[in-house]
Length: 173
Image: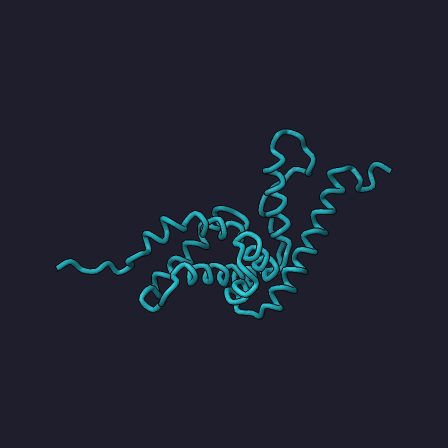
């Protein structure tokens, strides 16, 4: 008699959704290496609780990713972290999209943990406000206000970079 696989369905989950889960983890951490580490820890937790997780295993894994990321941000405190070295915007060498992506990652890193998690859930993962609230364990109103403040802060950061790229930072006066 063949013994039933202990983690039945895990290989399918990772094969089908692993890329999307890794992309989310990278956005939450700011680097591929840290994202891979975060996803690995989340997968370990899923495997430890595999038999107790009823229903949506991917949902459990995603919640674990977000909670682990917030825990890491809290532990790290307010120490500044450089996630990616970027050149000033406006360099016309054919890599504008790469610079824009790096600038966005850097801007996300400057946000408080909850704002960053809400923006990733709402605009990268495209979760509804209620789904994001459920994922983070908060109210829909908290998601709305946090997203609003996070977007406003991103606008402030990117506006300053746009002015620097246009040479309007006071040097041209």
